[in-house]
Amino acid sequence: MNEQNGGLTVGVDLGGTKIAAGTVDPGGEVVSRVRVPTPHDPDRIAGVIAEAVQRVRTGWDDVRAVGVGAAGYVDADRSTVRFAPNLGWHDKEIRDIVQEATGLPVVVENDANAAAWGEFIHGAGAGHDDMVMVMAGTGLGGGIISRGRLFRGRYGMAGEIGHYRAVPNGLPCPCGQHGCMEQYASGAAHTRRAREMAAADPARAAVVLALGDGTPGGLDGQHVTKAALSGDPFSLEVFAQSGRWLGQALADLASVLDPSVLVIGGGLGDTGELIRRPAEMSYRRALGGGEHRVYAEVRTATVGSDAGLIGAANLARLHQLLSAPAAGV
Image (cartoon, rainbow, N blue to C red; front, side, top):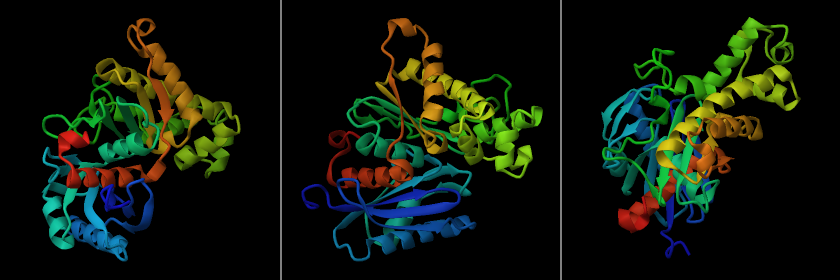
């Protein structure tokens, strides 16, 4: 079975705080895995990736290739990370380094693109050829599937949906601009919003404040989710406000890309209906000419935290065994 479907591949999900690696079979099952902290020294990260790959492939003699999903801008050749602020990388030729260390072919992809591909193949995007996924976590990333293909743009950097400017002269963003959608529709923005609303009206926020240390600064996203699930009006209003911004982002993307399904992933996606319902309502209100269009289905991700790892492994499998046009990637 492995021979006919491309054998086993290793997927790596590389973030600013952790490196998750796993050996993945053609059906998307992770058969071995390891998780290690991301080194603070940028020059050590590639070596730790290679070590993680070697660990998860031990005992498996049919590992064919490695896919690395990295949080940063990846070039069109899927070889070099042009810029990864959370990793301290500039023009890091990660493919060559990991190939030399492991002796396996390597494909590098943006982490949100890898997660979108994993969700498209094995999760909420299955059965759709046109999908947009938004990763609402610490930042706001995204991935675009068009006609069954991962859309990367001419230079490999499409899908950076968090960094279109939604609010002129708005909040400052680490990318150097102001008013990026990431500052309004991400998981980090959701937590900041809860703290600001709690500081403005602590009496109304009493339920959620009690779940933390009693101060607005002690709130985190898990507190807001727990209180919302219990029906707390304040926390539900925080989700309504975050859903309004996220729905606006979905409407903007749908206006340009016209997908059949919109998938919400990341930490906000993990809250399920708490974010999906207000986001869908906002999306339907904000979509221009909506009464004359077919609304895309709005779903939350189903693969979960393994989506990036599984997606990277699948991309490596396809690139190793098939030409890119035939593989649809």
